[in-house]
Structure formats: C-alpha cells, structure tokens
Length: 82
Image 1 (spheres, rainbow, N blue to C red):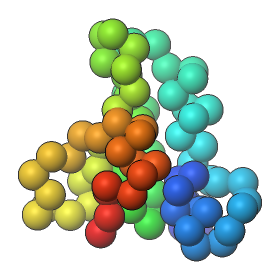
Image 2 (cartoon, helix red, strand yellow):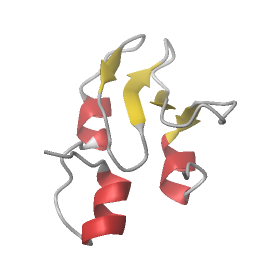
Image 3 (cartoon, one colour):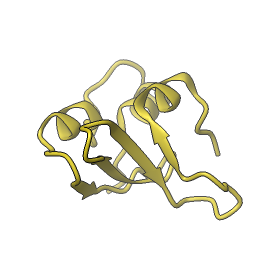
C-alpha cells in the first residue's frame, strides 16, 4: 500500500490523516538522528535533525535534483516538486 506525507496526502486526498506524519516524526527525533520513510508522492526518504535540532527532509526520488536536503518550510511551500 502506498504511503504519503502530510503535503502529498493533502494534495492528493484533501484534509486527511497522513500515512507519514512528518511533524510527529520530527518531534520525536533527537539531534543527529534521521528516520527512514518513503513517500510515494514526493519521494521523501528521510526525516532528520542535525546536531542543532534543525529538522531536514531528504529526497532521493529524482536524481536530477542537486540539493536533496530541504527544511520543513521549503517542503511546505512547494519548493520540492517532482
């Protein structure tokens, strides 16, 4: 079964509970740790925090993307699109 992140779930199904709740995952991570996910919509592959507790999202879906690391703000604003 396909799983979708907060943004992809909203874009595809409207306001519904996402399979991959990025905010919940990020809230539970300590600094310097990443959790593997796989969003079938945008290709998000990891939700992580750096040592300063900044949240970053990693995307491996499209090899043409030079920068595969984005902030939550960039992801929410639609900078990440495939």
